[in-house]
Image 1 (tube, one colour):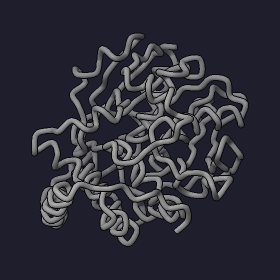
Image 2: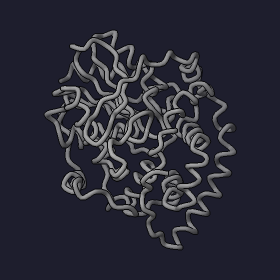
Image 3: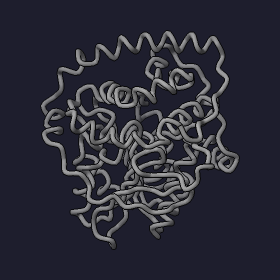
Amino acid sequence: MRNPVPAQAVDPRRRLVVAGLAALVADLGAAVPAFARSASPAAAAIDRTVAKPFGPIRQINAGVLNIAFAELGPADGAPVILLHGWPYDIHSYVDVAPILASKGYRVIIPYLRGYGTTEFLSKDTFRNGQQSALAVDAIALMNALQIGKAVFAGCDWGARTADIVAALWPERCRALVSVSGYLIGNQKAGMVPLPPKAELQWWYQYYFVTERGREGYRKYTSDFARLIWQLASPEWHFSDAVFDRSAAAFANRDHVDIVVHNYRWRLGLADGEVKYDDLEKRLAAGPAIAVPTITLEGDANGAPHLDASVYAKKFAGQYAHRIIKGGVGHNLPQEAPRAFADAVIDVQAMA
Protein backbone atom coordinates (compact mmCIF):
# COMPACT_ATOMS: atom_id res chain seq x y z
CA MET A 1 0.00 0.00 0.00
CA ARG A 2 1.41 3.34 -1.05
CA ASN A 3 1.04 6.54 1.02
CA PRO A 4 -1.83 5.33 3.22
CA VAL A 5 -4.21 7.93 4.58
CA PRO A 6 -3.40 8.36 8.28
CA ALA A 7 -5.72 6.46 10.58
CA GLN A 8 -8.07 8.65 12.57
CA ALA A 9 -8.96 8.17 16.21
CA VAL A 10 -12.45 6.75 16.51
CA ASP A 11 -14.68 6.95 19.56
CA PRO A 12 -15.27 3.41 20.95
CA ARG A 13 -19.00 4.15 21.03
CA ARG A 14 -18.88 4.81 17.30
CA ARG A 15 -17.15 1.45 16.82
CA LEU A 16 -20.07 -0.29 18.51
CA VAL A 17 -22.57 1.51 16.32
CA VAL A 18 -20.60 0.64 13.20
CA ALA A 19 -20.34 -2.99 14.21
CA GLY A 20 -24.10 -3.16 14.63
CA LEU A 21 -24.68 -1.48 11.30
CA ALA A 22 -22.23 -3.83 9.59
CA ALA A 23 -24.11 -6.85 10.89
CA LEU A 24 -27.43 -5.43 9.80
CA VAL A 25 -26.13 -4.59 6.35
CA ALA A 26 -24.74 -8.10 5.94
CA ASP A 27 -28.32 -9.34 6.29
CA LEU A 28 -29.57 -6.62 3.97
CA GLY A 29 -27.00 -7.53 1.33
CA ALA A 30 -28.14 -11.15 1.37
CA ALA A 31 -31.67 -9.97 0.68
CA VAL A 32 -30.84 -7.87 -2.36
CA PRO A 33 -31.92 -10.40 -4.98
CA ALA A 34 -35.33 -10.68 -3.32
CA PHE A 35 -36.25 -7.04 -3.78
CA ALA A 36 -34.45 -6.72 -7.13
CA ARG A 37 -36.55 -9.33 -8.97
CA SER A 38 -39.29 -7.03 -10.23
CA ALA A 39 -37.34 -4.89 -12.70
CA SER A 40 -39.50 -2.98 -15.14
CA PRO A 41 -39.20 -3.92 -18.84
CA ALA A 42 -37.66 -0.51 -19.54
CA ALA A 43 -34.93 -1.01 -16.95
CA ALA A 44 -34.23 -4.57 -18.10
CA ALA A 45 -33.98 -3.47 -21.73
CA ILE A 46 -31.23 -0.98 -20.92
CA ASP A 47 -28.81 -3.83 -20.19
CA ARG A 48 -29.61 -5.70 -23.40
CA THR A 49 -25.95 -5.77 -24.50
CA VAL A 50 -22.54 -4.79 -23.27
CA ALA A 51 -21.80 -1.62 -25.22
CA LYS A 52 -18.52 -1.47 -27.08
CA PRO A 53 -15.81 0.12 -24.94
CA PHE A 54 -14.41 3.55 -25.62
CA GLY A 55 -11.49 3.87 -28.00
CA PRO A 56 -7.92 4.25 -26.75
CA ILE A 57 -7.77 5.95 -23.35
CA ARG A 58 -5.68 9.11 -23.44
CA GLN A 59 -3.41 10.38 -20.65
CA ILE A 60 -2.44 13.96 -19.86
CA ASN A 61 -0.61 15.68 -17.00
CA ALA A 62 -3.01 18.02 -15.21
CA GLY A 63 -2.34 19.53 -11.80
CA VAL A 64 -1.10 16.86 -9.40
CA LEU A 65 -2.29 14.04 -11.64
CA ASN A 66 -1.70 12.22 -14.87
CA ILE A 67 -5.37 11.94 -15.83
CA ALA A 68 -6.77 9.13 -17.96
CA PHE A 69 -9.74 10.07 -20.09
CA ALA A 70 -11.84 9.01 -23.04
CA GLU A 71 -12.64 11.51 -25.77
CA LEU A 72 -15.31 11.27 -28.45
CA GLY A 73 -16.60 13.68 -31.07
CA PRO A 74 -15.01 16.44 -33.14
CA ALA A 75 -12.09 18.35 -31.63
CA ASP A 76 -13.79 21.64 -32.47
CA GLY A 77 -17.17 20.63 -31.00
CA ALA A 78 -18.77 22.26 -27.98
CA PRO A 79 -17.02 20.66 -24.97
CA VAL A 80 -18.95 18.46 -22.55
CA ILE A 81 -17.22 16.97 -19.49
CA LEU A 82 -18.91 13.91 -17.99
CA LEU A 83 -17.92 12.95 -14.43
CA HIS A 84 -18.48 9.56 -12.84
CA GLY A 85 -19.00 8.70 -9.19
CA TRP A 86 -18.32 5.93 -6.68
CA PRO A 87 -18.27 2.99 -7.13
CA TYR A 88 -18.59 3.56 -10.86
CA ASP A 89 -16.27 4.62 -13.66
CA ILE A 90 -16.29 6.23 -17.11
CA HIS A 91 -18.56 3.46 -18.42
CA SER A 92 -21.47 5.18 -16.71
CA TYR A 93 -21.38 7.20 -19.96
CA VAL A 94 -20.63 4.43 -22.44
CA ASP A 95 -23.99 4.95 -24.15
CA VAL A 96 -24.32 8.69 -23.45
CA ALA A 97 -21.04 9.75 -25.05
CA PRO A 98 -21.75 8.36 -28.56
CA ILE A 99 -25.13 10.10 -28.62
CA LEU A 100 -23.53 13.44 -27.79
CA ALA A 101 -20.61 12.89 -30.15
CA SER A 102 -23.05 12.18 -32.99
CA LYS A 103 -24.60 15.59 -32.31
CA GLY A 104 -21.24 17.30 -32.76
CA TYR A 105 -20.14 17.65 -29.13
CA ARG A 106 -16.56 17.13 -27.98
CA VAL A 107 -17.08 14.69 -25.10
CA ILE A 108 -14.45 14.26 -22.37
CA ILE A 109 -14.89 11.51 -19.74
CA PRO A 110 -12.05 11.40 -17.18
CA TYR A 111 -11.25 8.76 -14.63
CA LEU A 112 -11.32 10.48 -11.24
CA ARG A 113 -8.30 10.32 -8.94
CA GLY A 114 -8.05 6.77 -7.64
CA TYR A 115 -9.72 5.18 -10.68
CA GLY A 116 -8.53 3.52 -13.86
CA THR A 117 -5.11 4.65 -15.02
CA THR A 118 -5.30 8.12 -13.47
CA GLU A 119 -2.16 8.42 -11.34
CA PHE A 120 -0.55 10.94 -9.02
CA LEU A 121 2.57 12.50 -10.48
CA SER A 122 4.38 12.26 -7.14
CA LYS A 123 4.45 9.45 -4.62
CA ASP A 124 4.62 12.15 -1.93
CA THR A 125 1.29 13.80 -2.78
CA PHE A 126 -1.35 13.28 -0.11
CA ARG A 127 -4.06 10.88 -1.31
CA ASN A 128 -6.88 13.33 -0.73
CA GLY A 129 -10.53 12.55 -1.50
CA GLN A 130 -12.14 15.78 -0.27
CA GLN A 131 -14.71 17.42 -2.52
CA SER A 132 -12.76 20.54 -3.47
CA ALA A 133 -9.71 18.51 -4.53
CA LEU A 134 -11.77 16.65 -7.13
CA ALA A 135 -13.15 19.93 -8.46
CA VAL A 136 -9.66 21.38 -8.77
CA ASP A 137 -8.73 18.25 -10.75
CA ALA A 138 -11.52 19.05 -13.21
CA ILE A 139 -10.30 22.61 -13.69
CA ALA A 140 -6.73 21.35 -14.13
CA LEU A 141 -7.92 18.95 -16.84
CA MET A 142 -9.67 21.81 -18.67
CA ASN A 143 -6.47 23.86 -18.50
CA ALA A 144 -4.36 20.98 -19.79
CA LEU A 145 -6.75 20.43 -22.70
CA GLN A 146 -7.02 24.19 -23.31
CA ILE A 147 -10.78 24.15 -22.80
CA GLY A 148 -12.02 27.53 -21.63
CA LYS A 149 -15.64 26.64 -20.90
CA ALA A 150 -17.67 23.43 -20.97
CA VAL A 151 -20.99 21.91 -20.08
CA PHE A 152 -20.51 19.78 -16.95
CA ALA A 153 -22.67 16.74 -16.25
CA GLY A 154 -22.31 14.18 -13.49
CA CYS A 155 -23.72 11.55 -11.21
CA ASP A 156 -22.85 10.76 -7.57
CA TRP A 157 -19.33 12.11 -6.78
CA GLY A 158 -19.31 13.43 -10.34
CA ALA A 159 -22.49 15.44 -9.77
CA ARG A 160 -21.00 16.97 -6.62
CA THR A 161 -17.83 17.88 -8.51
CA ALA A 162 -19.84 19.40 -11.35
CA ASP A 163 -21.92 21.38 -8.83
CA ILE A 164 -18.75 22.76 -7.26
CA VAL A 165 -17.26 23.82 -10.59
CA ALA A 166 -20.52 25.57 -11.47
CA ALA A 167 -20.66 27.32 -8.08
CA LEU A 168 -17.01 28.39 -7.71
CA TRP A 169 -15.92 28.74 -11.35
CA PRO A 170 -19.06 29.76 -13.29
CA GLU A 171 -16.83 31.32 -15.95
CA ARG A 172 -15.63 27.78 -16.77
CA CYS A 173 -19.06 26.11 -16.70
CA ARG A 174 -21.44 26.85 -19.57
CA ALA A 175 -24.28 24.79 -18.10
CA LEU A 176 -24.87 21.93 -15.67
CA VAL A 177 -26.63 18.56 -15.52
CA SER A 178 -26.64 17.08 -12.02
CA VAL A 179 -28.18 13.78 -10.93
CA SER A 180 -29.80 14.20 -7.50
CA GLY A 181 -29.38 17.96 -7.59
CA TYR A 182 -27.35 20.11 -5.23
CA LEU A 183 -24.76 17.90 -3.56
CA ILE A 184 -22.25 20.42 -2.21
CA GLY A 185 -21.56 19.56 1.43
CA ASN A 186 -19.41 20.53 4.38
CA GLN A 187 -17.93 18.83 7.42
CA LYS A 188 -20.18 20.63 9.90
CA ALA A 189 -23.29 19.34 8.16
CA GLY A 190 -21.72 15.89 8.03
CA MET A 191 -21.56 15.81 11.82
CA VAL A 192 -25.30 16.34 12.31
CA PRO A 193 -27.03 13.08 13.32
CA LEU A 194 -29.93 11.83 11.23
CA PRO A 195 -32.92 9.66 12.20
CA PRO A 196 -31.97 5.97 12.39
CA LYS A 197 -33.59 4.98 9.10
CA ALA A 198 -31.69 7.73 7.28
CA GLU A 199 -28.43 6.80 9.03
CA LEU A 200 -28.83 3.21 7.84
CA GLN A 201 -28.62 4.38 4.23
CA TRP A 202 -25.15 5.74 4.95
CA TRP A 203 -23.89 2.50 6.52
CA TYR A 204 -20.83 2.30 4.27
CA GLN A 205 -19.37 5.63 5.36
CA TYR A 206 -19.51 4.53 9.00
CA TYR A 207 -17.86 1.25 8.00
CA PHE A 208 -15.07 3.20 6.30
CA VAL A 209 -14.20 5.15 9.45
CA THR A 210 -12.80 1.95 10.98
CA GLU A 211 -9.58 0.22 10.01
CA ARG A 212 -11.63 -2.96 9.64
CA GLY A 213 -13.67 -1.06 7.06
CA ARG A 214 -10.59 0.09 5.16
CA GLU A 215 -9.16 -3.43 5.03
CA GLY A 216 -12.56 -4.93 4.29
CA TYR A 217 -13.00 -2.64 1.32
CA ARG A 218 -9.46 -3.42 0.16
CA LYS A 219 -10.08 -7.16 0.41
CA TYR A 220 -13.59 -7.20 -1.04
CA THR A 221 -13.56 -4.17 -3.35
CA SER A 222 -15.44 -5.83 -6.17
CA ASP A 223 -18.03 -7.51 -3.93
CA PHE A 224 -18.53 -4.24 -2.06
CA ALA A 225 -19.09 -2.26 -5.25
CA ARG A 226 -21.51 -4.85 -6.62
CA LEU A 227 -23.59 -4.61 -3.43
CA ILE A 228 -23.71 -0.81 -3.73
CA TRP A 229 -24.84 -1.11 -7.35
CA GLN A 230 -27.64 -3.47 -6.30
CA LEU A 231 -28.80 -1.36 -3.38
CA ALA A 232 -28.63 1.94 -5.28
CA SER A 233 -30.34 0.61 -8.42
CA PRO A 234 -32.65 -2.18 -7.24
CA GLU A 235 -34.47 -2.50 -10.58
CA TRP A 236 -31.39 -2.47 -12.80
CA HIS A 237 -30.40 -6.02 -13.73
CA PHE A 238 -26.87 -5.35 -14.95
CA SER A 239 -24.87 -8.30 -16.27
CA ASP A 240 -21.61 -9.60 -14.86
CA ALA A 241 -19.85 -8.29 -17.97
CA VAL A 242 -21.20 -4.78 -17.44
CA PHE A 243 -20.13 -4.77 -13.81
CA ASP A 244 -16.71 -6.31 -14.45
CA ARG A 245 -15.95 -3.72 -17.11
CA SER A 246 -16.30 -0.95 -14.50
CA ALA A 247 -14.82 -2.89 -11.59
CA ALA A 248 -11.48 -3.04 -13.42
CA ALA A 249 -11.11 0.69 -12.64
CA PHE A 250 -10.99 -0.04 -8.91
CA ALA A 251 -7.64 -1.83 -9.24
CA ASN A 252 -5.96 1.60 -9.16
CA ARG A 253 -3.38 1.49 -6.34
CA ASP A 254 -4.76 4.68 -4.78
CA HIS A 255 -8.43 3.72 -5.01
CA VAL A 256 -8.97 2.53 -1.44
CA ASP A 257 -7.09 5.48 0.09
CA ILE A 258 -9.10 8.01 -1.94
CA VAL A 259 -12.47 6.43 -1.15
CA VAL A 260 -11.79 6.00 2.56
CA HIS A 261 -10.42 9.53 2.91
CA ASN A 262 -13.44 10.97 1.10
CA TYR A 263 -15.91 9.49 3.57
CA ARG A 264 -13.79 10.09 6.66
CA TRP A 265 -13.31 13.71 5.62
CA ARG A 266 -17.06 14.18 5.22
CA LEU A 267 -17.59 13.14 8.83
CA GLY A 268 -14.79 15.35 10.11
CA LEU A 269 -12.69 12.31 11.00
CA ALA A 270 -9.88 13.08 8.56
CA ASP A 271 -8.16 16.34 7.73
CA GLY A 272 -8.06 17.80 4.26
CA GLU A 273 -5.22 19.88 2.86
CA VAL A 274 -4.64 23.47 3.88
CA LYS A 275 -4.44 24.61 0.27
CA TYR A 276 -8.14 23.79 -0.13
CA ASP A 277 -9.31 25.56 3.05
CA ASP A 278 -10.47 28.71 1.29
CA LEU A 279 -12.47 26.71 -1.23
CA GLU A 280 -14.08 24.63 1.51
CA LYS A 281 -14.98 27.79 3.42
CA ARG A 282 -16.82 29.08 0.37
CA LEU A 283 -18.54 25.74 -0.15
CA ALA A 284 -19.62 25.59 3.49
CA ALA A 285 -21.68 28.73 2.85
CA GLY A 286 -23.82 26.78 0.39
CA PRO A 287 -23.23 28.97 -2.68
CA ALA A 288 -26.00 29.31 -5.23
CA ILE A 289 -25.47 28.04 -8.76
CA ALA A 290 -26.32 30.59 -11.42
CA VAL A 291 -25.51 28.70 -14.64
CA PRO A 292 -28.39 27.05 -16.55
CA THR A 293 -29.10 23.73 -14.86
CA ILE A 294 -31.16 20.58 -15.29
CA THR A 295 -31.30 18.19 -12.35
CA LEU A 296 -32.36 14.58 -12.80
CA GLU A 297 -33.67 11.86 -10.53
CA GLY A 298 -34.49 8.25 -11.26
CA ASP A 299 -37.83 6.97 -10.02
CA ALA A 300 -36.13 3.94 -8.41
CA ASN A 301 -33.04 5.54 -6.87
CA GLY A 302 -32.13 3.41 -3.86
CA ALA A 303 -29.28 5.68 -2.72
CA PRO A 304 -29.78 8.51 -0.21
CA HIS A 305 -31.15 11.57 -1.97
CA LEU A 306 -33.29 14.62 -1.27
CA ASP A 307 -36.53 15.66 -2.91
CA ALA A 308 -35.92 18.36 -5.53
CA SER A 309 -38.09 20.80 -3.59
CA VAL A 310 -35.39 20.91 -0.89
CA TYR A 311 -32.63 22.17 -3.17
CA ALA A 312 -34.42 23.86 -6.10
CA LYS A 313 -33.78 27.36 -4.74
CA LYS A 314 -30.03 26.71 -4.85
CA PHE A 315 -30.22 27.05 -8.62
CA ALA A 316 -30.54 30.77 -9.27
CA GLY A 317 -30.42 30.70 -13.07
CA GLN A 318 -32.58 28.92 -15.63
CA TYR A 319 -33.55 25.66 -14.01
CA ALA A 320 -35.56 22.51 -14.64
CA HIS A 321 -35.96 19.21 -12.80
CA ARG A 322 -36.83 15.92 -14.46
CA ILE A 323 -37.84 12.60 -12.94
CA ILE A 324 -36.77 9.74 -15.20
CA LYS A 325 -39.26 6.88 -15.00
CA GLY A 326 -39.04 3.20 -15.83
CA GLY A 327 -37.27 1.71 -12.81
CA VAL A 328 -34.22 3.97 -13.14
CA GLY A 329 -31.86 3.94 -10.19
CA HIS A 330 -28.82 5.84 -8.96
CA ASN A 331 -26.48 5.25 -11.91
CA LEU A 332 -28.86 7.21 -14.11
CA PRO A 333 -26.65 7.92 -17.15
CA GLN A 334 -25.92 4.22 -17.63
CA GLU A 335 -29.48 3.12 -16.90
CA ALA A 336 -31.19 5.85 -18.94
CA PRO A 337 -28.57 7.14 -21.39
CA ARG A 338 -31.00 8.77 -23.80
CA ALA A 339 -32.67 10.80 -21.05
CA PHE A 340 -29.29 11.90 -19.73
CA ALA A 341 -28.00 12.86 -23.18
CA ASP A 342 -31.21 14.77 -23.88
CA ALA A 343 -30.68 16.76 -20.69
CA VAL A 344 -27.15 17.71 -21.79
CA ILE A 345 -28.40 18.81 -25.21
CA ASP A 346 -31.30 20.77 -23.71
CA VAL A 347 -29.23 22.54 -21.07
CA GLN A 348 -26.68 23.54 -23.71
CA ALA A 349 -29.55 25.19 -25.59
CA MET A 350 -30.50 27.09 -22.41
CA ALA A 351 -27.03 28.60 -22.10
